[in-house]
Amino acid sequence: MTLTEAAFWTKKFGLIAVGIFAFGIIFLLIILKPKKTDLPQKYLEPDFACTQTPEEFLPDRLSIPSLEIVNNDNVEYVIQTDTGKLGDLPTIVNVYSYTDLEQKITAQAEAKILAGKLGFDPEMIIRRGTTEYLWNNNRTQRTLHVNARDLNFTFKTSINMIKELRKMSDLPTENEAITAATSILRSLGVLDEGYTTMQPSVYLITINPDDTYSEADSLLNAHLIRVDFQKQIPLISIPSNVEGAQKIISYLTKKNMSHTMGKILVNDSNVDVYNFSTLMTYSNPSKSNVSVYVGAENPSIKNHNSIHQIEFRTWQQEVESCGTYPLISPEIAQNRVQNGEGSLVQLNYNNDEIAPYISQDVKRYIITDLYITYYEGLYEQKFLQPVYLFTGVATLADNSSADFFIYYPAIDYDNLEERKELPELPTTKKKDSILPF
Image (cartoon, rainbow, N blue to C red):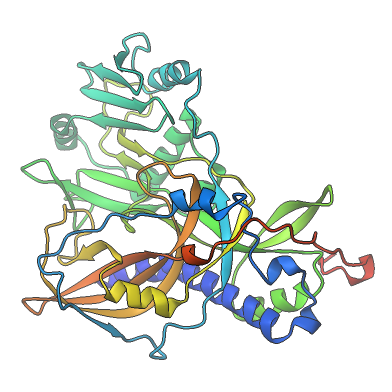
């Protein structure tokens, strides 16, 4: 891993580490000093409230694809964290429900509007049964594929066109690329506000002779700039009117942990809430499900003429969690990963996070960090659920090193219960309010 990449991952997963530690401290305070915090039952046990029964939830347990390695037998796993242990992590977390998963009656009409905004003639639609809508513009060498069920879409410009445009003009700066990417998503009406609270990640891309993508070493040698939009999801939310909340918030603040303010509805009233969040991650931890590729301007196109590719594959989830669920312990997750049950989702063996993966022969995984993130895959899922993310350095058969990322589902699926109706959150008296005004 280069210094630049190390800085990126430190910055990216620093937020996750904060979320984990914050959550761990919260539950440590709750468990060790329940009388002083006097928190409601909701904070002491999961409510399993996303479904009525475990049988309804289990069909949606996470199944995460894994990269292949040459030899998956007798691979050694070593823990080399700062303490030699995986640390104290939370016992329960929020789970969120996705909305609008059924195909809309207005899907075709909405797809036509999208096509028009991207410069296609809406009426030149090509239908693939009832599942996909296609557009093709031979003049601009652009195509659009829209999934009829959820209106997720892929917009592309031909590789030859991208290369020719790059010969004629320079790329924008990285900041200009972020501005252009944000602008196109806003104009299409698909930029969820959750993606605007974090600075997008940026990758420089070069196009290889075989038309595959690789990571460019500089803007000068790049054909495209990929802008990945990131999103935070609250692991836990502390309402401002919960007794004992101030002590927890103050403690976390002294530990340089950050939070964002939101609101929840309690007893028909809006209450300020402190959200301690982690990142949403994807089938490839180094790539978002919302990516925009910015390149040299196309003078023949009037609007958004530097946008050459968009990969939009995401689903809207409820703002508030549908319930809380128990986690398996980090040790159990580690044992299952050692048994080959984890999902290897990235193995960066050539300092290139863009190039297509080629199967490798791994001798050893040295785990240096463990995080909790929320996982959104490439296919529709009913619930947004957390995963453990094991990271570290792998030793390959030729003794070279590679950074790795392994997912394992964090929910304790073996101990799900029926939905529980827990008491409503108590409110503090006005004089005891922890609000800063």
